[in-house]
Image (tube, rainbow over all chains, first blue to last red; front, side, top):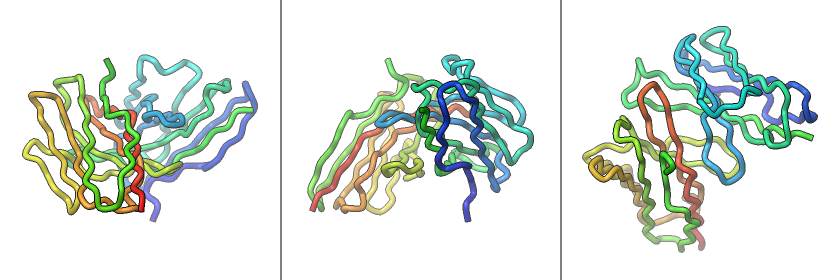
Length: 115
Length: 109
């Protein structure tokens, strides 16, 4: 059974048109992450939530925002997508309180295309 | 300097070969270490955690040297199904996971 679910799996948007990617988890993990991964590159952490506490990476553009309305769901909003934002967006969860060492569980990713 | 650096690869090896990947990290306060495997256009999946004492899981052996800030992964008796990108991952404080760029392995018949 899928534990970290991302929707949609493929998203096509137009340059400048806002888009929202969603992530949900059935693991009840308290930490959720969003990564951006471009071809042949490492996943790049955009931000993460520890419970409701939002932790933004210093180099994450303001164009990227996130919401976590409850433990199970986390959203990535791209306010004005540019061509350079085309990438795979990966959601991951972990639970420091439950496991040592911490293990991340990844969703299947959403591949974003910007036209 | 990148926080996590890996062998650039790609590694092209025949079936049955032994192959080793290296990884270095810059933050001496790093807490935990992992190797993830990522297949083409798929999400990363945990291969194994890395402990100071070294650990083995079947054909895979991971080593950590904290003094040198160095992690390694050894794959023995390579299979075609081992072809993938191997990502070195380091956990900093504050639940912050940092990924290396990955090393691509292709095992050929």
